[in-house]
Length: 431
Image: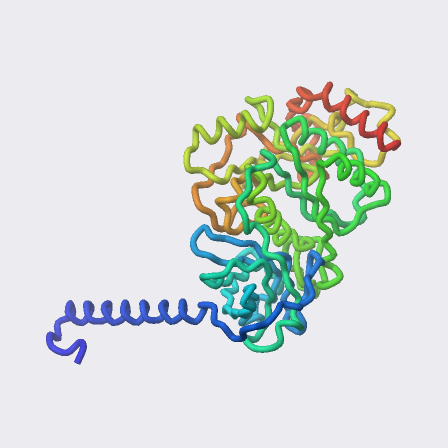
């Protein structure tokens, strides 16, 4: 009998460790086998309706699918970005239809709810399924059971199946635009600053905005800069405009921002060298370099093996103005003129400033808003003398007198190009 013989403490300890290791290995092997795809039907054609919505609710399951992505960084899997109830969703299955033989494979999903729900019952989740070995499925369906009729399930196209050459260097992900957003002037200024700094694509997860803002978005879509991802999350869940749970019956925080950011990373994984995660009122301003490309070349050279670069956020209160760059033709446009706001709040004692990121999307597994949760490679905090985030918004330190603020005119380095570009947009959109 295993563990018989010597009765010394040492022998007992070795015995316990050995048995525990054997049980652990056996458990992991069984877990792996339970998630292997299994053929449940043959000779079928896939007739399920293809899902076209950004957010698709699974019937009676408290699960919402955003999009599936092929991911072979560790093993051959389909990774679905979704939203699930953290406690009520216990099991899901991926249904793969493999043509031309018409084999239907079912694979048990690993449901990985992100750790940063901030108390809300629903959160971002990775729904990860092993793919069949001899099949590269183009679509997947998701069901709460390993049996049923695949024709009744929505089919989702699996993106990122083919590796592509990067079409752009920098993509900015903005999530989510909501609250009848109407800060038109600041949005145009941010867009033009992004372009000056080297951005070719801006992806916006749009819930709603004003009619005037729609007009501006249409201009940037036609220009080829903006891609709009419809984000009707309040059609499915009770959404909060706060990031933390307030015991008010809301299902998910800040319009599902974290889910949108994760989707944006995977959506641009094969087409953008870098992905920038910030809000529309935030601009990463280089202090030692003219643009992001030269800045990132330098940062990568100094930090080999780093995939996540974090930039410190600094508030420039919109309530404190300079008379410089008070451009009369802009006064009729709703929103903030960032060129007039060059006073930033000092650091607060014992308060760490939040950060936003530029990441290598191919090295990110899961992200939050201010940091990456899981990634390959290192993260580095970029020093403030290299770059900072210019964040023009309502003051956080409201009682500070003007003399306590720090005058910082870094933004003015770009003033001539920015003014010219903004005037062109206003002229072409007839604002």
